[in-house]
Image 1 (cartoon, rainbow, N blue to C red):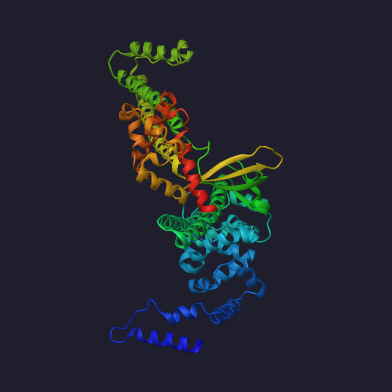
Image 2: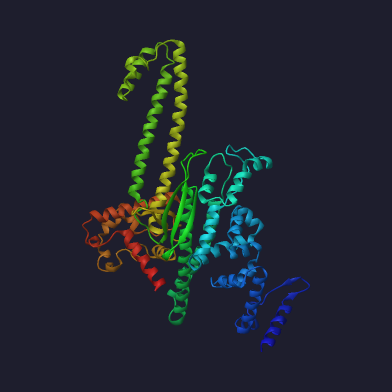
Length: 564
């Protein structure tokens, strides 16, 4: 039977070749292929061959057995390319890992694309199933070092210069120096060493997030398909949706840890994972110096415990609209003050050019200085007399000051614009994004610090996306005050619904927003609607909760379906 199916498949393959056109068209529905794929003997033969191939490439039987326990299909790894780098990654020898991550992701991607393609998957597999391997890779990334092509001033270094400047330091770094000594070498200004740590963490985050997005889309597709089915078909699609949702959350757990380490790396010169305890509790050591270290400045160490979390909903650490407005007001006052200073300097600059204006200038300037608390003008130290060379000197000084003030004003305006845009995005994301965070407790301290290290695009979480799509289809009636809607929400005074203040939000049908202006409109409408609810005497709102919490309650309900 096995022989006849194999021969039948070979015949189909031969028939799929068109010699005249030099084309091969695979037969999509092949009974022979389907039978062979599900034949246990064929599976055993393939697995036996794969084991032999992996062993021939350098894995020991123990390493092969440990790798198979991770649950990754061996055939897919083989098809992607069993390169030397992939084998070294699986073996996990510290020196090999350090060498891999001492090159940039772009360089490795060019030289060993199979390794780069496999890395993100391997990080996801080892995070919970082989945490020691995961820690070794993260440590290798943090510990990586290379010699840049330019010095601290951006001047290109020749090969000889790089050799002279760095031979001793590189030798010390790669031949048994302690972690403290390595950190010191990395941060001292005189040493031309650098690290690809952040680049690698960003690369891995991108790969893991790509996998999570794929699981998210599959979850939504299977869930929506199940809603239109009954019986076994519904169960089958919900089974797929639940499986994909679990894979999504597992991937985002890894993404959250990588984002946390990226945040830690950006604040410290170097870090090291000492061990991983229960529930993925990381014990780490951080190494840092002063902001501008000198050659003999010490390297400080801090030990702490870190736990990474992936939050499907917002928390108090995320800005809301009122906080955005408060920040806007603060920046507005800074800009107004800076504009006032520019205008004042411009006035002093111009008035000095008017003949005979010395006494007038002196009086105005002294009054201004007194109002600012500068009493030096009383002793004539700041007064300007009408001598030409004094006027010319002060004119040049004021002109230079004005240029600097205008530059500062321009920088303030740009900063305010950027902070406003970031605040708007943050307030909008509070409704629809998920968050990566970590809780850190430093050794000897009982205080736990929570840090938000990243947040996703709106609707990336499958449960949130399903709720958002429902909102766009049904409006707020699909989730607002759901438990009492039939008795209360329809009692809202029709005249109130016509008011601009609440009508837009209550009847909103568009919530997937990428444009900052649209997000700001959403934030304003949501805030106005909530304000109306809080001051309204309408019975329909008497027992309604915060709108955001109501929407998130709907998300939780969908999430519960995908978990239970």
